[in-house]
Length: 270
Image 1 (cartoon, helix red, strand yellow):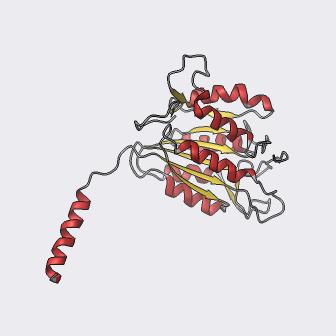
Image 2 (cartoon, helix red, strand yellow):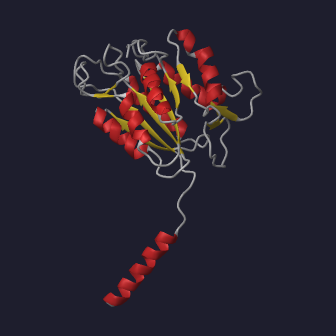
Image 3 (cartoon, one colour):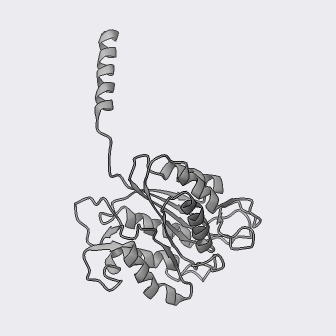
């Protein structure tokens, strides 16, 4: 083909691509599992990779229809980068940030999610203020749900929520602990207790958990009620901060229709 003709075809193709409508209603989930730590102060967590696999399968199922991106064994800067990449580029989209691994619950570092190189003195922690600053830097509205399966996860949620509310940014938090002192536990089935029951609830078992009639959709409000009955009696109470987003959920029955909403290890203390 003559070079001039090739340039014309290439220009026409570029114009065609640019004229395609942008994808709307795309929903993304960023899942991070930290299990292999480089400092002995943190025990390795064999359950973390299983947690991520379980949540990945659930969220990308036809019931929830999320496009998932999974990461294992991240440093704090890498966690921050995953958040930057995961925040929706399209206004009014919904996304999930899920983390399973160690969290720091010591004085001065409470609420930090432990990057794999942390030495126990805050050398590699991802802090609530950093998460809030990242979300606040985006110039368009979007919905965020944060699920944390770690020690001190309640502290992370409460601090991040404080920063976000100061900027009038609503974010839903659902965490394994209700304060910064409690610790999540790797259960006997190869996954963490919190993630195990979240997955069970989202599979459809939480539909109607708050006393209403099942309607085929599991909302986060219902998931909260389900965890109160099934997870909290294990000894560590979860934390739920809905901020008006609790009606989001997943279908309890898989259909071909895309939803625009979603709604034996020894015990290792994390």
